[in-house]
Amino acid sequence: MAIDVRTICLGLLSRGPATGYEIKKSFEDEGAIGYFLEASFGAIYPALGRLTEEGLVDLKVEQQDGKPDRKVYSLTESGRAAFKDSLRVSPGPDRFRSEFLFLLLFADLIPHDHLRHLIDERLEDYRQKLHELESECVQIPAKTSAGLEFIRGQGAAYFRAMIEYIENNRHLLEAQSERIPAHAAE
Amino acid sequence: MAIDVRTICLGLLSRGPATGYEIKKSFEDEGAIGYFLEASFGAIYPALGRLTEEGLVDLKVEQQDGKPDRKVYSLTESGRAAFKDSLRVSPGPDRFRSEFLFLLLFADLIPHDHLRHLIDERLEDYRQKLHELESECVQIPAKTSAGLEFIRGQGAAYFRAMIEYIENNRHLLEAQSERIPAHAAE
DNA sequence: ACGGACATGTAACACGTTACATGATTAA
DNA sequence: TTAATCATGTAACGTGTTACATGTCCGT
Image (cartoon, rainbow over all chains, first blue to last red; front, side, top):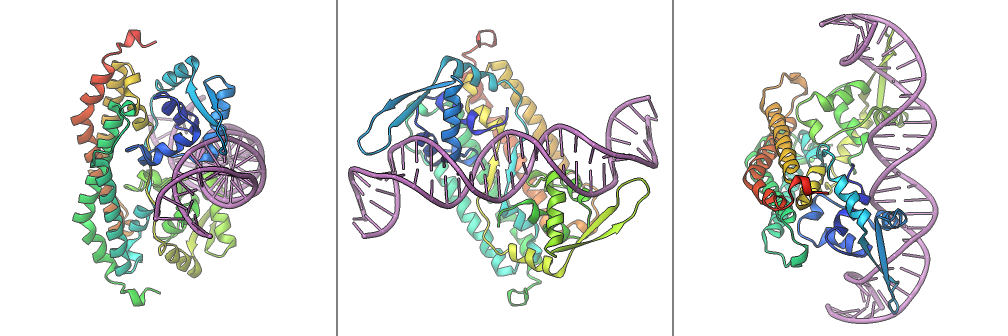
């Protein structure tokens, strides 16, 4: 399958009509989905165009005053079928990329103070995101689903586990980097 | 910084000399690092070439009988400095991509039996990976570090959290998909 | 005899990001 | 007046994957 922008658009449209702009926004606004999906305008608009050519989606153009026309896309029958089909393939492995973890891998090369600061920052970040996921989050009822609720819970479980692990084990890293005082790092 | 193949090569070489082939292998073999780093030969070899041109690494060519020459790369002084420098920037956000989670987001469109099967499979997969991380794993002592140990623990904590969450919450998804019996899915 | 590990490298291709272009309205 | 939100789109660019090319040795 490959979780490309095409498929993401198809998936989000299966929950109801939307414009390209709204699809992009849903990564930021809508609950948890931004934590494991993202796409830029430069990817979404062309994808929507191709999907239209292929007949998997269609659009209604709403004219507006100063702004460009609003193009509201919806899935066609064949689009819905194609998306359902794409859900049948067995999913590939998860892909996790973390600059933060990469840095920690080389914690012994990082000055002690800086390392502590990095960890504190990231921990704060995780706590913030956990908080967002746990808060009720005013959601358009029509757009929630068991899947979305599950994903939100998964995200929360992930952040909770990471916070706990880092809090309990950061001393292992900090002990290593302590040997190189900040002023002697270079 | 951006955690590109260049930087990954620099980082791994900071632990000792290696060939391109060995760098690639270390993603598969070496403890946890494959869970959040990866690169293909097609990316590694050119990266090593460019790094050599730039004087950040140098190589000793070991001639071999039938096989191509073994090119053993090591960091130069300026390479080590450049890498240390790159560790100074503040790390960007984690990036997590999961086809599996994407499918679950649309669990209500998946036939019940298939969904159960998907979840069982993934759970088995996670348990397997957790087991690998928990097992002692014969490691070249010179290549272990506090960072690597920390990362292994982090990976284990991650898989444990995911397994627990999925086991406790899969019923939420399965209840939804139940409404669509497999034979009526199309 | 056959596949896998060892070993390096190139070229075509896919995919996505960033920056740019355009422009009205509204809140600070 | 300055920034943000709404709204779409193109083009250059970077980065990485996949497939191909080549060839030996070793275990089963």
